[in-house]
Length: 77
Image 1 (tube, rainbow, N blue to C red):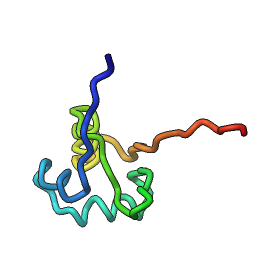
Image 2 (image 1 turned 90 degrees about the vertical axis):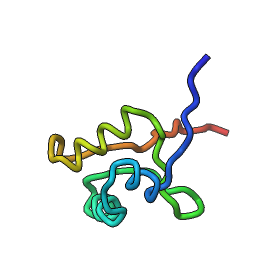
Image 3 (image 1 turned 90 degrees about the horizontal axis):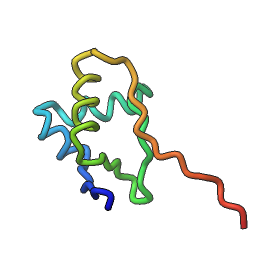
Image 4 (image 1 turned 180 degrees about the horizontal axis):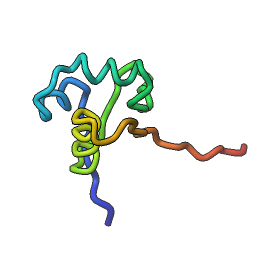
């Protein structure tokens, strides 16, 4: 059975990483952090160690870009 991760809002993710939430929005605007926007307009981040660690890597300039988009298969129908 696959492990289900909960989602974190940008504010919750920033608190987890102890960084300003504005930094996350700046990365999204500057296309260094690619993430799908929810229908509500919110950005939700998977609450998993890999996502949290890669956002931390972006913050620490270990990586220059991060793509967290979910690629949706095209539906015929």
